[in-house]
Image (cartoon, rainbow, N blue to C red):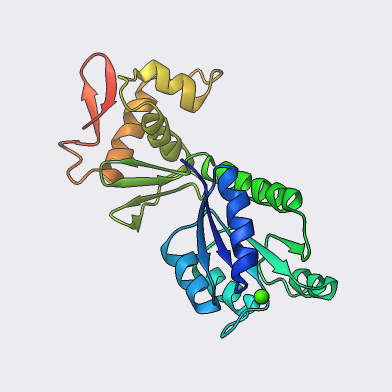
Length: 227
Ligand code: CA
């Protein structure tokens, strides 16, 4: 999918040159000629990056950026007319990701666009931080488990058990395996410790612990996730 660039620039001739060069590089390009239009398109048209001129009619680039940042983390490259404005872009912590100073070369601008859109790709590839089992949500970053949005009070071991099931959604997991993976290789415990832990976990996560629907027993083999 081509990356979408939004150019917010009131000088049509400059905007057109930038658009021409970006399109040649395979980008999809949108143009806005005023601050309010730029803001609207940045929020509604989901660009991958915004090139934002500072000197704009109606609403200047700083104001547009502040409003964008209220709801969006889209990368923004500020286009400044003078060197002095760079200090403002960087110093005010406006939330700009980068800037270029007019007059800029197309080579430089394209390099900046490329660098700043690459970053969003890696941001999207962030590892999953939440998993779902039925109505149970596991937030691995906060190490929290929720049932219907209400937090469950699990012990560390109970958390690790449910996480292990979530990571192995199609597998029947034996008590031996749970003992090895959750309790650890050097735990020489009774396998009944697993039964006890599972019973307690079920009391917390199941609607009816006597008839488990989330983690089901396969008699003589182990446990598996319900569908
Ligand atoms: Ca301008």
